[in-house]
Each structure stands twice: as C-alpha cells, then as structure tokens.
Image 1 (tube, helix red, strand yellow):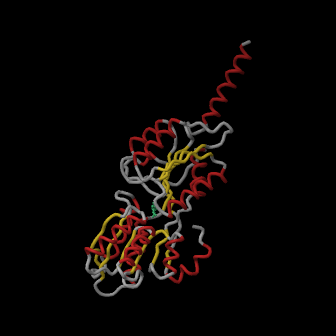
Image 2: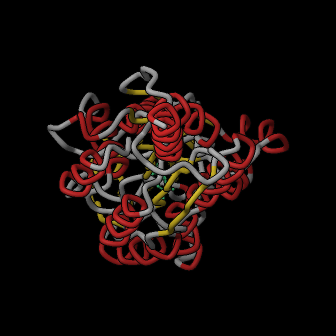
Image 3: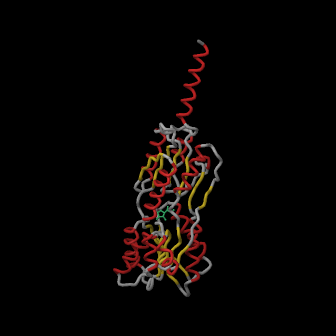
Length: 319
Ligand code: GZL
C-alpha cells in the first residue's frame, strides 16, 4: 500500500513540475514555451517590420506567442505585462515605449519567477535584475553616424531642425545625444529648432510645417526615423522647396519607403536601425527559459546608406 502511495505522489509532483516549466510560468499544454510580447504600437514602418519578425520567428521556433499592441501608451504595455503574469507565461519580452516607470511591474514579474527580455528599446532603472538581457541597437551610435555624415558633407553655417522621436523613448533620447556629441566639433552646425513628431509620418509633417513657418533659414532636417522624414518631405514640397536639394534630410531606420526616397534623391543619408530582431529574441528566450546564461546586452548589427548605396541595396531589402 505505502509503495503505491509513494509512486502516485511522485507522479503527481513530476506532472506539476513539468506543467510549470522551468521559468515558474505555465508552458502550453503540449510543453511548448509560451512568450508574452508587449509591443509598442504600429506607429512606423520599422514597427511593422519588427512585429512581423517577432511573430514569424516565434512560429518557426515553435514558441506560442501572446501578442499585444499598446498603441504607444505605457499604461497599455503595463496592463499587458500584468496579464501575461496572470496567465503564467514562461517568458515576457517587450519594447518599452519610454525609459522610465517599469520597476513596479517588472518586480511583479520577478516575484512570479517569469524572466523578462528587453527588445528594441531599453529602460532606465538601477535594478538590472529586473530583466535578463537587452537586445537592440546602439542608438547613441546611430545619432553619431548621422552627425558624422553631416560634418563631412556640409560647409559654412548650417542650420538644422530636428524631428525627435517619442518623448522619453530611448531611441529619441540617445539619437539626440549622439548627434549633439559629434556636431559639437563643428560650431558652424547648429540645431535651431527641435520638437517631437512621435515617430509618425503625420507628426513629422505637422512639426515640419511649423518649422518652415518659424525658421527663416533651414539647411538640414535630422529626423529620428524615416517616417517623420517622409512627413517632412510632404511639408517641404507643399512649401515649394525641393527635399534633398534645397533642404537636406538625414533619417534613421532604412525601411523600404525611406530607402526609396533616398534612392530618389529626396533624402540624403539614412542610418540603418535593424528591426529584424525576431530570430535572436526567440533564441534568447529559449536559453533564458532553460536557465542558461545569456549576455546582459546584445547589440544588433546595422550600417548606413548614401543615395547610391540605396539604389544598389533596394532590390534585396527584406523590409
Ligand atoms: C528603434 C525603434 C524606433 C524606430 C522607429 O529601435 O524603437 O521606434 O526608429 C520606431 O521607427 O517607431
């Protein structure tokens, strides 16, 4: 009798452990890893490509994906993370829309023993135990590359207007910082106006219309992403000026629409920001759920494009 009881108890315990998975979450019934992904929104071509990469990579990695679109609102991302905790997923991944305000909800995930992966954007927190790793670009370096091109391709007094990304977002803060670090070496280059266009085409157009009214002499637009740069092109044309010629344009991302405008001479230089983070994210998720060591920081590979380079690269671009 005692032997049978022990065997039954062991079986129950083993089942319970398997069901919980190693991350303290609840793997899907068939033992697959379940990932809760809280996306920023669908604000730009970059975001669309990033979402596609995450969804397709989850499928090929055999990871069950729970996906939410926060429409660029932090409270929606926090709600989504809380729901993933309640659903006991095995791992949570998200791109924080802004850098601050995450400690409380990430502490809840930590207490629930659900590992968190930051992808695309970083958070500004002293407690680095709140996440396992940050996979994404070096945005300061992107800003530096943008400014380096301008330093090498401008002469004499050069007035720059800046279309900033979402206020408080890591790419907006860092792309500004990197750009300013480099132009400091060339006092002739001045940022005469700077305002957020929230990473959207409409935002870039509206802010550029205002700049064209308030700034008598604009030589260059530095847009933190292609979409705002494309919006600025519409405003520049409506003002009867030639984008890429009368007013030079530098952007970041290198999505298809941006690269097409670059190849067509309406943008002058693009710094690439790679959105295809899905495969690396799924690889990191599997390692994290299995309790394997992962690097604290994984920086994505990316390059820059001139107008001629865009013409060559366009046919093979995946996004
Ligand atoms: C950068 C990403 C930014 C893109 C924008 O990694 O967070 O957000 O540059 C997107 O296009 O909206």
